[in-house]
Amino acid sequence: MKSYRVPESNCTSCGERLDAAGTMCEGTPAPTPGDITICVVCGQVMQFTDTLGFQGVDDPTKIPGIHPDDLRQIRRAQEAVAHAKGN
Ligand SMILES: [Zn+2]
Image (cartoon, rainbow, N blue to C red; front, top):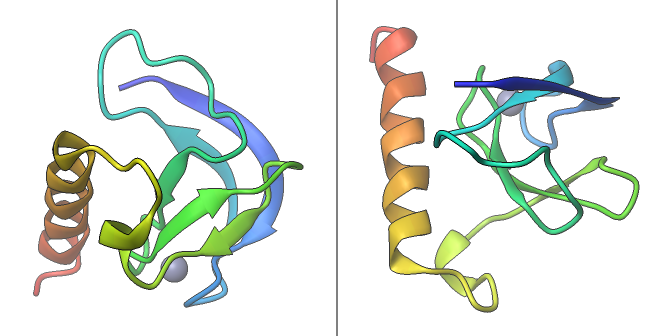
């Protein structure tokens, strides 16, 4: 996993200050507006805004053009966050 610095923003769900994003796959470029990200603290799904801030996503399946593989990756990432928290 590769990490990128992003402008500091707060998670839209838990309020955690986040200033980095890690990629899920090898070779994934740095985050760009519209990309999906997941809070490492609470698992909230968010989308990068035009300024690389965060916009909360309540239902990832409603994201226009989302690929089933992306939804699987989101679920896996959320499970990893839940596991890390001991749930
Ligand atoms: Zn959060």
